[in-house]
Image 1 (tube, rainbow, N blue to C red):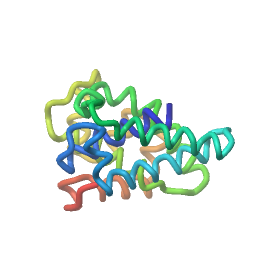
Image 2: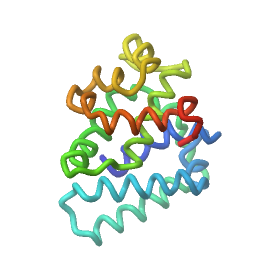
Image 3: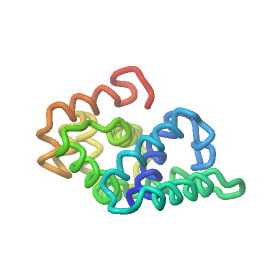
Length: 171
């Protein structure tokens, strides 16, 4: 789930900031493809599988994500993100922070997700709470999901620095 669905969540929020509408289009973007590889590297550290098996699965995911004729719409993947982020991203992020690491791809997906809440057209059961929280920044959004991460000053600063329109950079 972390490799496939975590990558889908990353693309659902980061790729539209770069003008991409589908998973396949996103995989054609070298910046986004690099973020996916970074996410997979990060998540793989916490999966109890042999390296060869993880490599095979990642190769299969690359083929699946880049397959012509398959239109995985990012807008559809972005629906109900608060539930998906909880299961797909935060467990990996907790493990990384426990190891003293600040993983770029996790920071980018959370920053892009916050930007998604700021942009309107949000289809999420928590949008009534998270849309106003997103205007305040990462701490307010994470406080609604995970108090431990919301109290992590280094993480909050990194996410806020990546939010498009805040730091002036796109993920």
